[in-house]
Image (tube, rainbow, N blue to C red; front, side, top):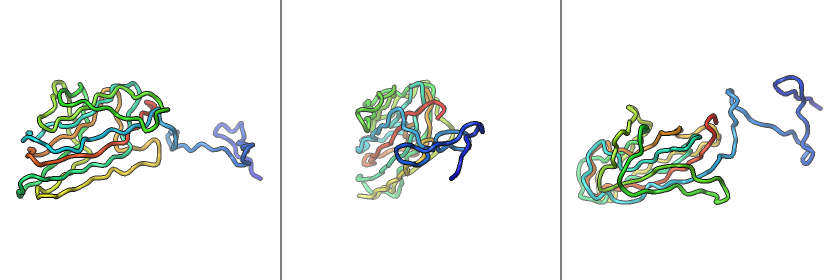
Length: 210
């Protein structure tokens, strides 16, 4: 038999009456919960479509901005680049970049979808894409560095994917977005007709300190 004291030294951990085992809470070194149900669990799509214009390098063609009061965690994702245009000795390129300051404008609006309809309400997220022209970026501030980049050679039927593996802990994700911050897909080179893009992100809204 063992008696396990809590952090204050004044209480003992006790058996769970139903199972006979101990009830435990796993914490990180900074006291964050290792496993915690998010406020709401969602997916948002990156439309699987063909770029239909020669959009300039540096343009944003997909973006989402979190305008809620908690924190939006990008837990995982899957990104696909492909090509079905005229073959050339060039490579398309996409960058994931964080931004702040304002919502992007233009294009077609999209919304996250809850993975469980009994979960919390979808928070305030402005998301949109435009594969025929750049999204409007008035007052948008892009971070200098970016966490990921991918693309594919411009050869007919070429494709390349970039998985962002899921994280098993609640406090870890690909990137966290606080109030007013967003994640966008930026062209690292000028698009040509025949570049194609698709995929999705798994999103968790969590507490601001989680």
